[in-house]
Length: 324
Image (cartoon, rainbow, N blue to C red):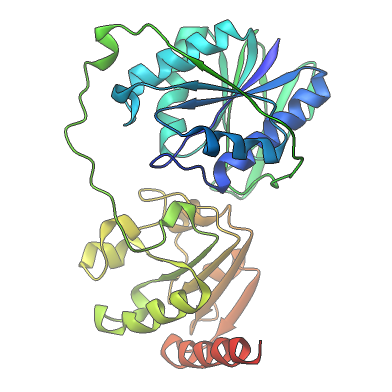
């Protein structure tokens, strides 16, 4: 038995999310007194694969194929399932991002495995196998029991600390025989946003709502975000009005994020919006309505006009950085 960890890459590079998965998987392997194996799919250089050893992984399986440079769900699910069989893995770990959410069901069918989607902690029990996840839009957590022989866990971002434990890495390059049926979906073109921090990867997010009043006032959001090295986001009404692009919309029908710090500016805090940001480690809310629902979920609240508060906050950050 072993623990298989799918370490997704972005243009041949790993991100913090991959290191969280490695740290999480290794801790599970330790508790089960078994081994953890990382799986990389796509053309990733050996030097980058060796970086995973910084976080304690001793074995990395690399599957390189030009057809796998872009995510094709059926093909990736076949590769992960095949490697899980070869490694006798009874636990498969993925991220709970768009890729993981797309892949987990297909892998589950192939391996006849139970799934916990959006885990937020290590299993609290291994007999029965019990894992916690958030529910009720982040207002509570629930424990899920998996009874199948093989288990699949998708881990929520920022829910487990990155643990450095440097070790030597053995890289095993293998080929997987794939069927033409695995590539029935063809990726024709991939368009990526460049020159800005990707929202789902951001440690800090500055977000604006209808309280910003118009797109013309967004300069303050962008300035604060730049000072903090943050990504920008918005509520659904803002994207519906066309003030901001839809890829910045966070919420139940938008992107689900889990930054370390989420600053909500002029956002009332509808339950649909909170569903997308509830996993944030710390929420700071700025709103002139002291009864705005956002304050019930915020760790820190500033009651005041966002157009008066933001300039003061920007000035305070600049002063702090200049002193440093």
